[in-house]
Image 1 (tube, one colour):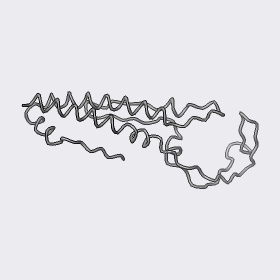
Image 2 (tube, rainbow, N blue to C red):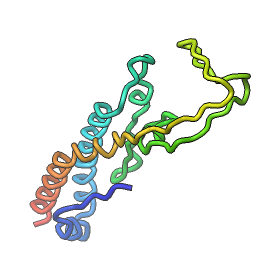
Image 3 (tube, rainbow, N blue to C red):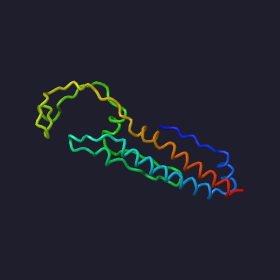
Image 4 (spheres, one colour):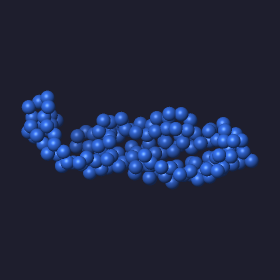
Length: 151
């Protein structure tokens, strides 16, 4: 979970009391712009396995507007969490076939493989961190606009 601090929160609270529809509209606009910027940055930050013809992780990063004031950006690729958080060393065993193999390259690994684990690649956190300045600007502008409207 990532935390976002809102500057000018007191202005937003006052606006909610006087004119809630204005606050929701302006914050919704700021949220929408923030989501676009962060989504685009996540696409840039996501790793691509060029040797494997990759891009699946990047293609599965989507933004979802849940309501006027809530949205999410995530990757629907099944292995996204393993890439983002990394994995510890572990054993992989053949289940349905006699041996583990890579069909694309023709490599055969055997019945059991001791995987060394993978280093974390927190591409989503980097995307949010790199987008932070622009996100703050969007919400500061929204707060200023709300303050002008409710005066």
